[in-house]
Image (cartoon, rainbow, N blue to C red):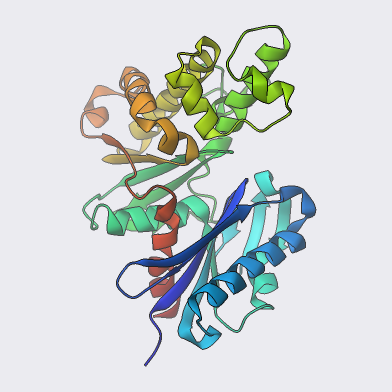
Length: 321
């Protein structure tokens, strides 16, 4: 009998989360490690392979027990050829990650954009296919999007659909295509928020996050959330600006696409979605046209980091069943 077990790997800008899933839609075991984005593509693949091997060891499974290895990548990917076009947060360009990872295992390797695979998991396991036209947005190291149209994943003509993080916007999140405008993720991602906070601290502004800057430690989503709880004015200022930009961009996209559901996820939302989403909604409704806007649900994913893991089931079904 063919195995129902799959392994899904969520490759992020800061972490590699790998999990083995069973036939009853359950996570059997998972392992997490830091992403060493500066080591190069081959070294990153070696780390992924090591995490898969660790899962096999922990679960005492053989390669023949696993139906597929599904890899979500934060960048533009061709799921048919396995080629990464560009993954900026990993410094990878024009690289066939599928073929490289396949050298380590006899298990079929499947790849997809990380938010696309998360969107598959969310559409199936959170909404049971009832969200007809949905946008999934993950806010973390960067900002990525996945589109579900008429219940199916939309990849676009050259697999770039959903790359909302690279939309050019001004400092208020309004679409702006002049030479000096920035991108959505450079204005509103966790990376952008943290860089702004650090810059202000170095300019003499006070913040509870100053200890991280002095110790040269990374400021992650949990630290930002703690700063908000402590009523840190500087952190609240920059996160509020991020929320305003996110809401504005999502409002413009909804006016264009007339979607019915927006699902937010990623490390920042998972850490403080309850605080951020009302602010995002306020900006959203001040931007979107009233008619398409009144039909939209804006919610936080209940699956959190597990969304792309569950998406592996759907990717396997599409390419192997």
